[in-house]
Image (cartoon, rainbow, N blue to C red; front, side, top):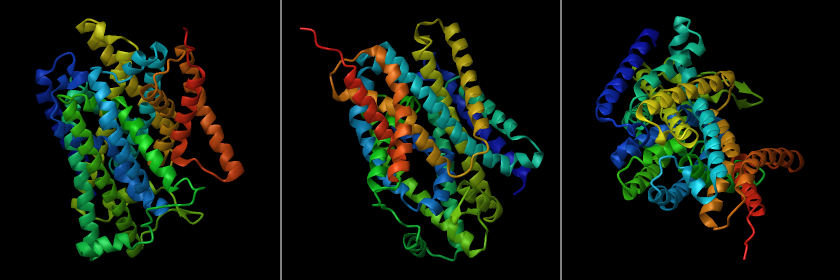
Length: 485
């Protein structure tokens, strides 16, 4: 596909985002950047959150990972649905009752200032890595599809994406993102549907034959009962529950959008609707993965293989879409991955800015001029952080989604342990010990996983988040305050 045409498509898409930003920011207040003035329609928030969670990782990584991981990821998705129910009926009422802007303020009311700062810091680390890895995948594809043709270096590509995101988010923040995410979700889903239709036609299959081809394929293995495997059902399901709670319910990025809903009931409807549509969408992407491998096999397209396994599976979808599926599929793919580029980073940068300014700079007590200055400085600072992480991981291969969830297990684990302990017990703890516990437990989890693999051939897999959270809870019990009669 012609690189100039792709560039025109991206520029047009950005123009639409700027129009949305212009109209939304007309009636913005000082708090619009952080709360969206709590006026967002829950249906818009629910649909937009799908794009933010999917990002380029689901868009590209999930179809590709089918070749090495079959449909085992679906076990994780089943767990996610249960996790979202927990968020709906346990976490949302807490956040709304306390009228939180930064959700980590809860930790201060429950434990103390050090727990609060530690929880927020772990979010900042988690979100910075997660956002960077998601954006990395999308940026690589745009580099391959467009910027290589103009001999533009990869670091310039990433820089340009971050600058464009800053342009349309710096004024109204989350108020703009709620609406731009809806557009981004639409293009992500449209790209998947168009690709399925094009692939189905190329394989000369009817709709029913397509369903049969997917469900009867050797990759259609949903359940893994091998207890030593990282893909074991119980490991995947339980980690799916916990990671959904951690990466959505304890994530300022996701919850900031939810908290823009008018009231608690609408926020709960938002999460339930979002969770069901997301589960169906992820199944759709897994099915798409089988079809892509069927297409490659039928037309003799050579894929990278090492030791009998596919490598660099994230390249499968882009290569086929841009080089084999025709102009319509190529355009829809470019729109989809462009949407993924922006949706994966815009809300993350806003959430990082919100958390840091509220949790560490006490911005709510500053005058309007100081608020604006601090907000813009912090937004710029996190853009630099994400840029740096992307450059550090720019040579990585394989499916990014596994890397994201493994990193999340270590960074969100202590956060999950803190919240579970706070919600389900009334025990008071020594607040000063919390930072040390939250730093040491991820290290201990990593060592335990390493030696369990070495000694017992047992991989925690995504369950490292459970081990991490459980160790945190045990340590919090140890540092509880003694009752003084």
